[in-house]
Image 1 (cartoon, helix red, strand yellow):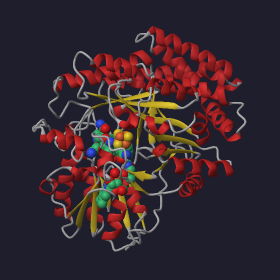
Image 2 (tube, helix red, strand yellow; image 1 turned 90 degrees about the vertical axis):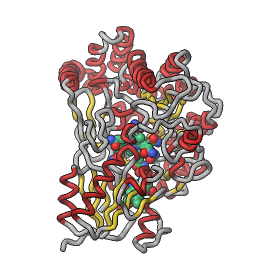
Image 3 (cartoon, helix red, strand yellow; image 1 turned 180 degrees about the vertical axis):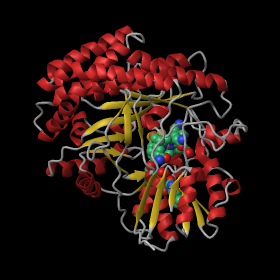
Image 4 (spheres, protein in one colour; image 1 turned 30 degrees about the horizontal axis):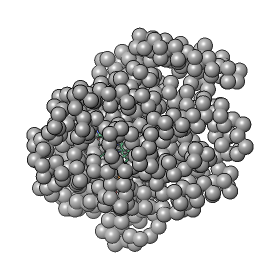
Amino acid sequence: MLSSVFGPYAQDDEFGSRSINPMELYHNQVTRAQGSFSLRMFHRSWGIMMIQANISAPCTVLDFPTRDDFARELKANQYDVVGISSIIVNVAKVREMCRIIRQISPHSVIVVGGHVAAIPGIETMIDADHIVRGEGVSWMRRYLGEDEDAPIRHPAIVSGMQTRIMGIRLPDRKGTTAATIIPSVGCPMGCNFCTTSAFFGGKGKFVNFFETGDELFDVMNRMERELKVRSFFVMDENFLLHRERALRLLERMKEARKSWTMSVFASANAIRKYTMQELVELGVSWLWMGLESPQASYSKLGGADTRQLTRELREHGIRVQGSTIIGLEHHTPDNIMAEIEHAVSHDTDFHQFMLYTPVPGTPLYQQMAEEGRLLSDVDYADVHGQFKFNFQHAAISRDDSKRFLDWAFWRDFEINGPSLYRISRTLLTGWKRYKDWPDARVRERFAREMGRLSGIYGSALWAMERRFRNVNRNVSEQIRALRQEFKRESGMVSRMMPAVLGPVLLWTTRREEKRLARGKTYEPPTILERTNWVEA
Ligand code: B12
Ligand code: SF4
């Protein structure tokens, strides 16, 4: 069995769950200040899905169990090996799960993998037989006596589930949500704070699951068939850095006339290696880019003018998600506000803010430990960059780190409006630019999104315009102008939709605000999947 750590997650408890740390990517670290406009969804635990798909032993993946679910499954079946996947914040849950396994299934071998393995002294904190650092597919194949160099088989992964926005849960219909593709793990840029880079070898290193554009094309083609999708969430820390692979993929897409959409992560220096046309033809429609700080000297920024780059990308219909670090070494109470204003002035579609955080395993952690600046009394459950510093900063106190972080999220929302408004603006800009483009793949992609969404966006804008009046009247008027533009550019049905759907969304938005004010939180469903299984 391979299991993720147990829930519930969005609550404060003795196992390290924290209400500010829900199992929701956007609501946790991107749109958390956006209230009922926050984009909420869950993502499966892809690491264990990847391992399961690449071993021939009978295997159960148990995702998001409760403690009772986990215990029940251990009682129901005799597992030779129980693997637990965890990140650092959840170490106390791993300890508890090891205890439960020893009690219920003493013959099972316990294997613990994922980022939690980077904690110094982890061996003495949990009762496991093996603690696996780095890539897990090859480890598990080796451990089970299988061929560790066999080609990687990519599991069919629906990128998100139970999406919710403005108080409405969107239906999980086959083909409507992107497929996740994981071309590699790690990143060779080796930024000092970066835990994913460090975990898979650090500077200059990474692990490629699919080396070439041809291999990637084949995987995406298979996912298109199996999941009926044409959009892909590419989970690679720096997808565009591997230019040869990306351009070969583009060649194959052109040959096969694939009008695919891709959401990717990339650093500014990697994006700069492409023309806007190449990015658009590749189907890049959403891009997660580290902005860090104008004073930062990270080589991934390559001296790029990130504001100009963001503007340019959005003019081509590419939604940008910026990521800014709060509490870098040069930050002080005097300059941090200006840095946050600078970040906000990028007017990205989404903006993630994170505290500068020395995480075990990274060069930054090593440096802070050597300088004696790590705070020894911070629980690992609170070391995730969305709460308070876990180190002694030269100029900013722990409590102030939280204040500045919270303020950054709020400021971005107040000045730029709900992300839902911003992405609809970028989509419309892209559609207007590319609706008559000579490459039919590109035309089709924009028309597809516009056709499907224009009525929905128009209705959401109708409700947003009204709800945002109290926050920022200026933004509310911009939303109104965009709504009218949508009306002009949409077909008859979509043009009529806001009159009906708009008031409904306004009502669901208000209802959601009340629920949130009462402390409502959301939890992912428990999922159990078996492979190579023969019932006894
Ligand atoms: C998807 C994701 C999520 C999903 C949750 C998915 C889930 N079901 O748990 C969401 C969005 C909810 C999420 C939330 C959070 N996340 Co997150 N998340 C990711 C992300 C983007 C992708 C993970 C992934 O699938 N990678 C691809 C797979 C293939 O890699 P992998 O998981 O590392 O697995 C490989 C190995 O680690 C190993 N392995 C993994 N498990 C096991 C188990 C066994 C038995 C073995 C042998 C091996 C093994 O083998 C796998 C294949 O090589 C990563 C960033 C990244 N690029 O990895 C961050 C990341 C894992 N998250 C991180 C953090 C900090 C968080 C949050 C605290 C939010 C925050 N403040 O940043 C919350 C925590 C929520 C909670 N309550 O637990 C950090 C972890 C830092 C650390 N060192 O612990 C990461 C690395 C991001 C970062 N760079 O900071 N996250
Ligand atoms: S470029 Fe991004 S993914 Fe790569 S090491 Fe730096 S922070 Fe990590």
